[in-house]
Image 1 (cartoon, rainbow, N blue to C red):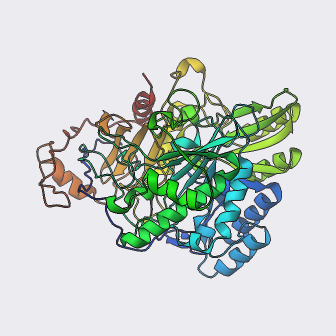
Image 2: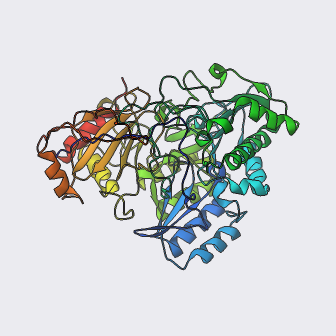
Image 3: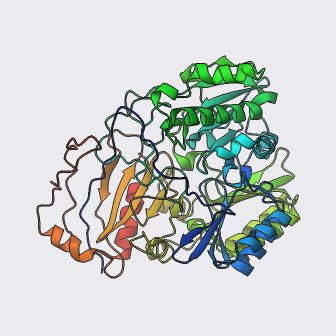
Length: 559
């Protein structure tokens, strides 16, 4: 039996300065484990998502011996091992060191580097920038001051196609023609404002990072909405051979500004306005290091086709689609697959390892919870694509599972109000084929938004840009479209609930006896009343799994 749920507005802090952090960064790593309801969690950083097939097998052995027998892929192209015992930290660290996956104990949590996953494989980018990632990682690990960055600080290295340039990174490098690179300092993905810019009044429904130490997720759990009046972020053009060093120097300038301000900032946009990373400050830091830097107009600070490279670009338009990726010449190809709901069994992971051995012994984990396996002969790539499809991976962009993600949910996360992975899989299975069966083209829209199921308001790991938010509450799921419109959250469908009562259902039922418009006197951080929330969804009676899936599918359609 499914039931509707009231639509509860979510408000964000406002003020003249970005909010200062009050606690330590609790982002998990390979050495700093996070306690979850299903055991401890380790996050293994994979700069650029790059790893060898041998390293991937060692990661599987560690998850098999110490964890729950599966691997989670994250929204930054990293891997997570869950279900770890309380006394296995030392053994896990030694396994990772031996595999070359832990080159620096002091810097392991700051090695957050996203890479265009198809760089150098399909001829579509302006340059192969995988070497930038490796150089940047080496510079990070070799610079003691870089260890002071937070575990949430993100670098993005884009080959010019405009895919990872949409991720809202703190520092983005974009390949340009003629041996140049664009260095772009990030904007707040929850407010669309440049570093240090005053925080605008957000529309009701916009979200900010309301949990300073929300360890399981990656990135701010806020909407990627952009608002009028947002200031332009700094952008500079530098010689390509200096790009990784320029990115590091920009991060060090941020660390110095954070230290000087006393603001405990984790991301560049959290710096107070007086200490913001302005174009002049970044250029001065580069000049002192002997790097020539030219200011770039904000309108030129993009990448790829029209609209790509901006944080509001639709994620499914920029992510590598599942399937074969032909290399120039047609004799070889890469495999591109995604993990259903971001989780792979070790059997599925080992099939990918075997495919990598059949290629050039490499794998790339993508920020869209996928894996790219490069360097196979085209005939072999077709064979392996079929094998991976039979194993349950998403291998076709027409699959209804493509672009659907979920947080950990219950039972792994104590804060979650639902087993969102099971509910998402159930809703998909009610009306669509399994991941091994592509959805017929006549049963889906030509373009779709990604969907993300979240067990609580933190929305850990949600996509950027426009996306369908399926949010669990005390008495149901709320379905809304998040994105770049001024109204950052709008109701798109009734909000059904799967399964039995959730915690807090009795309280929600009492709330349902009141008027369906939320009239609570919510106040912002300055004590001022917030604007009235949106009208709540009236109860609509029982809904089936198929009806829930239909509502989500309707919200995904791109007009």
